[in-house]
Image 1 (cartoon, rainbow, N blue to C red):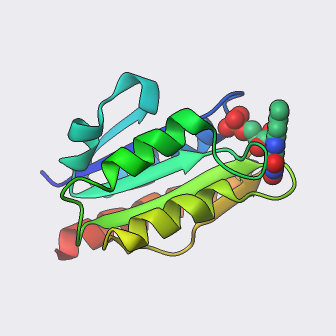
Image 2 (image 1 turned 60 degrees about the horizontal axis):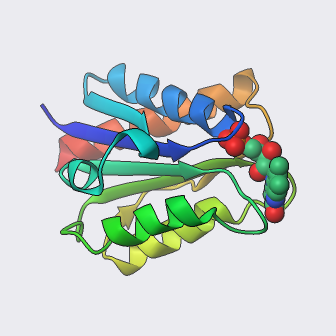
Image 3 (image 1 turned 60 degrees about the vertical axis):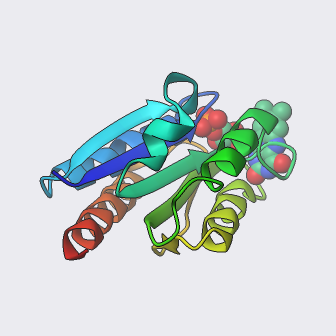
Length: 144
Ligand SMILES: Cc1cc2nc3c(=O)[nH]c(=O)nc-3n(C[C@H](O)[C@H](O)[C@H](O)COP(=O)(O)O)c2cc1C
């Protein structure tokens, strides 16, 4: 089965909620999904997926160093032409998801819209948007 890897950094659970909702959306379209904190997976495992969604909340107008290192290592792998998505919760500026999307695009990945940013705790409407992104990712995977 086609596989989507959803990986995230989340300090208080907000981006984690987004990741799980994206995964649920994709699963509802019968795509095999692995969702995990980046601490619990490896760059090689994620790089092997057909589509890769990466989420990070924003800290100090960017990404925290450990997730940035993970993304930088991932885009060195054979990800050219793969489907990508970027997302994250934020407080007031929300740079991290755009930074992830830029790195993916520079590596030749096809980043699906939208780069999904949600302020603070996702509400019901936000969760629906995350599920929508997961469904869109699933449809993109199936088209390949
Ligand atoms: C020390 C600290 C620095 C932060 N810096 C930013 C920032 O520069 N820009 C921003 O949009 N949000 C910033 N935030 C807010 C977080 O991104 C926000 O609380 C987010 O919902 C956390 O999501 P998470 O639970 O997935 O980690 C900061 C929060 C903390 C605690």
